[in-house]
Amino acid sequence: MGTKGKETPDPIKEFIIREKRNSPGLTQAQLAARVEGKFGQSIDKSTVGRILRPNSDQSNQDDGNDEQAGSPENAPDLESHRRELYYFGQRLRDRLELLAPHQALVQWKATSEEAGLALWSGRPAIPDKDTAGLSEEEWNVEDGWKSGLFNARFQPQFAIFREHLAESNLWKDFDRLEGQVRGYFQACKFSYAKTVEKVETKLPGLLAVDVHSVAISMLASASGGVLIQSEASDFSYPVQEETSGDYTWWSLRLGAWYIKAERLDDLNELMDVHKSLLVDASQWVEFLSLRTYRSACQDTILEFQKALTPDVTLRHLVTSGSCHVCLPG
Image 1: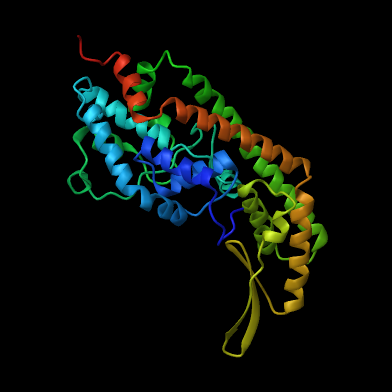
Image 2 (image 1 turned 60 degrees about the horizontal axis):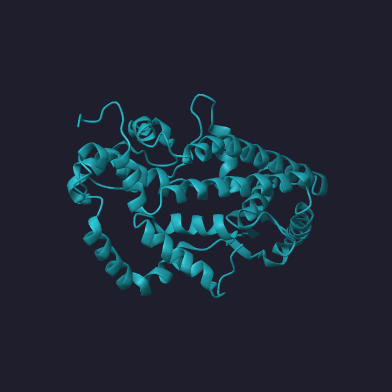
């Protein structure tokens, strides 16, 4: 898990700057997800913004050089059909993300075999084509891209894009990823069930909603490297006294989840259990399996994204291929 106040290591800074230069369309949240995937370290998107700001002038200069070399939007070999596929390829690459374990648990419950896996982040809020300043081709892609988690295989351009890149080895990574992600989601499910079982054993009187808060907060902690023993000391336990009229209670925050109790001693006992489970979970078979699947998924995602990076490579792949709807000649 990332620690506030610590200087971001230079390799991570360089990685963020390089990724943004290669893929200008990446958001700060997506860059933060890539950092976590490569380095196993979580980073706040505001930190990503601070890292990028000193390099904005250089980035703009680099962008200018790229445009002189032939930007994808203006390249003569990128007519309307291929330009639309290029924009689709950008999103297929840049919005592919691995959910954190606690988010994956929710996605697993909502996923059916028919629907497939929604592995892509949704589009940002955009008002309309003219306000967003998008070309007709880019708007066609963005308008069909749903908000929230999204399965890009259902996008009309997907099958055609795959035809254009049919000879590329990247589809081996792509096809392997779905099986890996299903294994990862299942590992998250088993890890959550194991945690619930342990919490209920140690705190038999705890309400079901609070058992869930303890278990899901531990699963969320796994997103920074999957519960290594040192994380137990990094986890904070803010407690606050709250009052409403004549009623007073105590509130404990476990990451993004809260547990309330009338007695502070009850929360102290819960904190002790949470701390001990954080240490124990690092050796549970379920969490070790989660770590293995998560690492495999991240490696495959990075390989797929690298095959479509930088944008000039993506453009070449699109223009060198063809499909059944391409204009003759």
